[in-house]
Amino acid sequence: MRELLVSAAIPAPRFRYTPCVKSGPLYTVSGMVGLDFSTGALAQGGIAAETRQILANLKAALPDYGVGLEHMISARVYVVPFGQFGAFNEVWEAFFADVPPPARTSVGVSALPLGAQVEIEFTFYRAD
Image 1: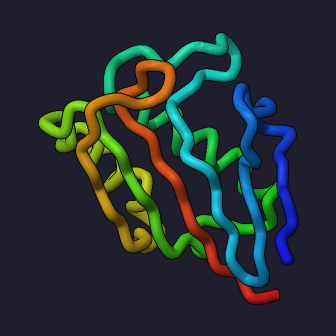
Image 2 (image 1 turned 180 degrees about the vertical axis):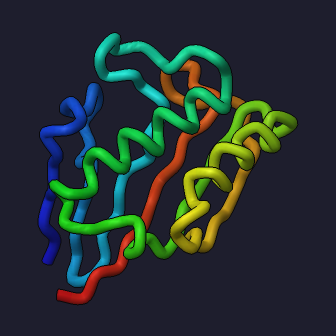
């Protein structure tokens, strides 16, 4: 059984997918790129700015999904170009300064949706 979850904090997807799916105690958040929802454009300033925007968007949506950062068990990170991964990692480390970070996989790819430099998908575990 799966439950499709949405958040009022982020706009509806531009393409056909569900932003978050809950199946038992697992919550899977679809890959997010760094869209600034006030402008509809990717955050300006490169991979660091896009990463900050992704994490801010995620944090805003979590209350509607019913989980918190403490429930995050894994993240899959896709980066273009992978040589910029250091800038991503600086933002990531600052974001998780007060919360233990999840397990993480990072992959260099040739392209991402909307010309983004980073996309992250997340998995949460919360036993009710």
